Length: 309
Ligand SMILES: Nc1ncnc2c1ncn2[C@@H]1O[C@H](COP(=O)(O)OP(=O)(O)OP(=O)(O)O)[C@@H](O)[C@H]1O
Image (cartoon, rainbow, N blue to C red; front, side, top):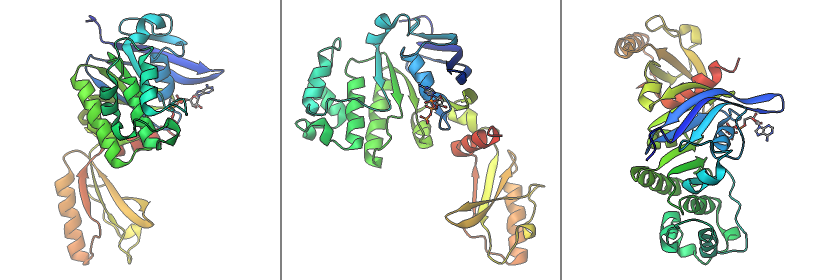
């Protein structure tokens, strides 16, 4: 047991030449917790992960994994880590079973082959060469290899990219089991549902900085509610009412214009009353009417758009 959190990042900075890819971020991950790093393309998620994995040194701030510097003390830290990179590098001519055996050769206390095949969901493909696996099956095998040594800390870089929905759900179950067993996980993903399903806490990065962090509930709290409907054919934007003083924003969804109102916390019901009264009065049908609380996607888009300027 360590007396400090297994992952501690304080003021981390990382440059590529003159470009600062990670610009001073801080977070901690507790034992048995899953922390998700979300963000726009190029936000710095993989760079952060690679620094935690000990592949790259920090250029500023400190990074500690299990109380050690993962770059300088890589030999001591590495046996405790499971790493799933964005791209797997298998030997194309080895079968799935041979690949597991090969990795077992240099993994301390490896899981038995059958257990690894279970984790990968690839029992039937044990004799198939890795080059013949589908993209999703390669990701599952890669996850099983990352878990082969029962790591205390697991890093997953976009683990379900390319998976069909069933494989994705199977992967989520595996990850949940691993977390329930006490493993600490840092995961990057572009699937917001994945973060909603798995993350105890998350951070949204943009241009090298953490813009928002907390539990999903904390992150969406304070972002208010949303009322939306398809723009009625015979109306112009100027014809739409203001609700509680808020005018609609127009977006395009499936080639139809959508009117959306961002409603302050607590204002959803009165704003909806106002809208329905207006629609009845105008004899307008509000196609696709939705009224809901902010989602992680709303916060994500707001973060990405709000910071883009
Ligand atoms: N080896 C490198 N040399 C130069 N620039 C790099 C290098 N690796 C990453 N970068 C740049 O650093 C920034 C952060 O990249 P990073 O891969 O960490 O982002 P990311 O959040 O993981 O993105 P994505 O979601 O697209 O995978 C990007 O602008 C990228 O082009």
